[in-house]
Image 1 (cartoon, rainbow, N blue to C red):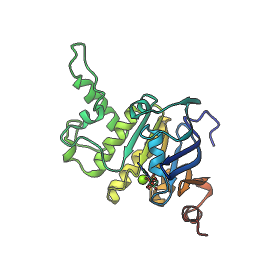
Image 2: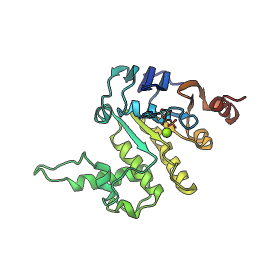
Image 3: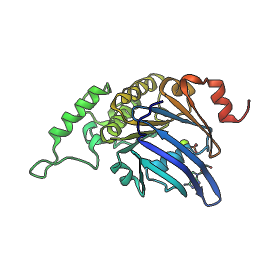
Image 4: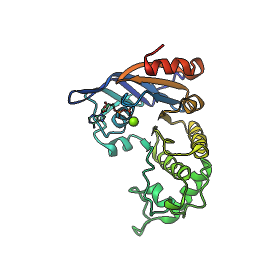
Length: 245
Ligand SMILES: Nc1ncnc2c1ncn2[C@@H]1O[C@H](COP(=O)(O)OP(=O)(O)O)[C@@H](O)[C@H]1O
Ligand SMILES: [Mg+2]
């Protein structure tokens, strides 16, 4: 395992929603350039953890450190300011807008006259799309004209553009077909080169074994264990997820 400073370190995270304990004593470090998969049955607490790291939910207790420094993620804007971006399964893009506007939504650059700097947005979109090999007709294409895989490619490109530390993916291929899923998996693999940490939630163990360096298993809010992907197999992970040997 990498010995360098983790980009993300969660220590003893606990989260309750009134009487429901969603996460107990969860600790995990994610290193630059590392892909960690978070797996577990429905209701295990995976999305809750993603929301804690992205500032949507505050943990009931426990600490979050970015580059070794403790941080408070009071809201999503604060998480973004720490270099954390999220990709959800439900393709959260503005349908009527172009690809380049989506990449910069809410964070549009302006030129010296205070006008939207479209030239800059288009140039950066084209560069990123090429680098990640997201195959779209053009930066000017409208989101609703793209396939699900292309849209998710744009969502990942957006996250990658803004994330300096960490990209969180919560079931990014759940709404996609087979070929589209394969394309998104390729794009996720290219993120490794950018030295950001990746935490991906997935139901597909094929996907988890294809993409991840380590696998973290949750069951009913409890952290069952973390394995190096190269040193485990599906049987072990399934046993950890279900609690049945
Ligand atoms: N906003 C909420 N209010 C109350 N309970 C919640 C809330 N979000 C999640 N939970 C509960 O926390 C547990 C974990 O849910 P979740 O993190 O969505 O699981 P997963 O993503 O692994 O399927 C579930 O029991 C769920 O009902
Ligand atoms: Mg979920």
